[in-house]
Image 1 (cartoon, rainbow, N blue to C red):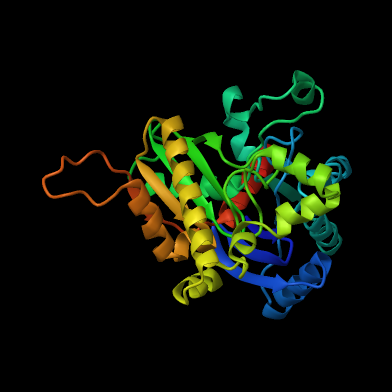
Image 2 (cartoon, rainbow, N blue to C red):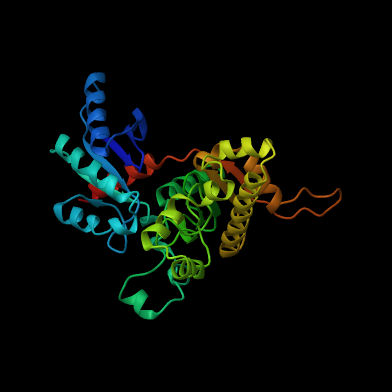
Amino acid sequence: MRMLVINAGSTNVKFSMLAEEREEFATTLVQTTPADAVKRCFEQLQVQGLPEVEAVGHRFVHGGASFTEGVRITDEVVARLTELNTLAPLHNPPALEALAEACRLWPDVPHVAAFDTAFHRTLPSAAYTYPIPRQWTEEWGIRRFGFHGLSHEYCSKEAARLLNRVDDPALRVVVAHLGGGCSLCAVKGGASIDTTMGFTPMDGLMMGTRSGSIDPGILLHVMRTRGLTVDEVDRALNHESGLRGVSGVSNDIREVWKAVDAGNADARLAIDLFAVRIQNGIQAMMLALGGADAVVFTGGIGQHDTRLEMEIRLGLWPIREAGEEPGPMPQVFAIATREDVSIAREVERILRDV
């Protein structure tokens, strides 16, 4: 089956045309609107004279409790997805806009939504439950959902392939997806058993502009004593924190490293804090797994920033002194994530089961 995969983000839209997981077309378009990007992709496909699209797969970051696996798009599904916009305001609305335009341009082919949260449907209750009032959990649906699932799924499968342990129920993999957004996942036998992102993609690791986990009392304090509104706190935690907030330089780690090399102490602190939080998180994932056979670094930072990776690895596994007894060490891989392949596999599964 030849399918188009649409991955709509907050600042760009990625497209790839796949046939039997072989890439025939790929582009990333920085758009005025997601709909405009989809229209431009449609025009490019026509100009290149590629074969007709037979199905379209769409990435949605948040599926909430409603969607624990991919689903074929209907009007009812769109209505339920729209209700989830408040849980992923940077990601779900652009995806819905791209979906609407794609359905207009390709009205006669099936459209399927794949969800980053779906991979984490296997989390045990102790991993997804927050220690909050029972009403919040049972009536209001507050729980850990986890994100980057399409990436974590693909990379853990690739690690299994590289280790010649495909379908091994005992295989333990920690995936570190490090980019603009960052999260870790503990994968055992191909299933997610713990992860760092939570009810929203703001939880867990420090990120480019997001704070990650902080004391919730801080939020109460700045609202009570400094008069910050909910929207101001939201903007600060989502857009003004993380690498950008600590370094005062940029959310782009390449710019932060340049500042480090120029002697900027705040930039050095940002890198140190980023690395330590990743180290602590990897240790927590390994504890959940009872050890690890592999650690995978992926995402723009995880795959390409070897300097950061070395700092993380040395913090986790210091160079041994001569004669020191070696313990079991996980294999470490840098893998280019292919969320589009995970989406395509989900599209094929959904359409095959129809």
